[in-house]
Image 1 (cartoon, rainbow, N blue to C red):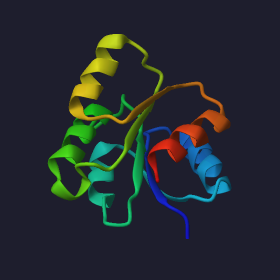
Image 2: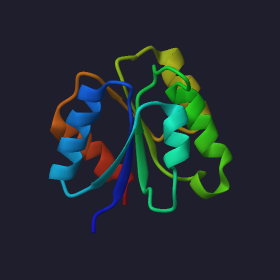
Image 3: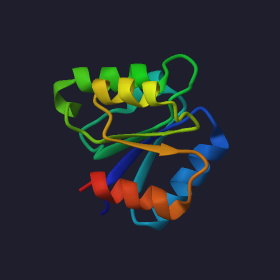
Image 4: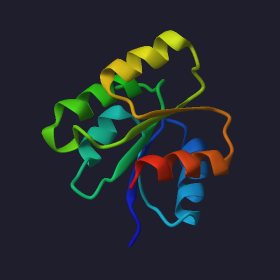
Amino acid sequence: MGKTILIVDDSASMRQLVTFTLRGAGYEVVEAVDGADAVSKLNAGIDAIVTDLNMPNMNGLEFLRNVRKNQFFKFTPVVMLTTESQQSQVLEAKEAGVSGWIVKPFTPERLIEIVKRYAR
């Protein structure tokens, strides 16, 4: 069985694209519609997280901070997959503990490359 990746995005089509891409590369996928939903789906089987930044209820940065507060997930790789590329947001996410950053639109190959780098 492959590594399990938690996908967090409020866009159903983006979740579908990411899920299809990662399952095709041999990963198991758990989907969440926003950060609040993702917090409820965190469990010991999650090996890495790919999250959007801009979402309702709990955005990606708030979710990342929640993940890092949890002792069990303190070192779980978290990759932001977002349309945002402003350096100030990247720096804020790095300070909060983000592992990687991918700007949308992206190629499936790039997504797989980044996930493989972090989900070991």
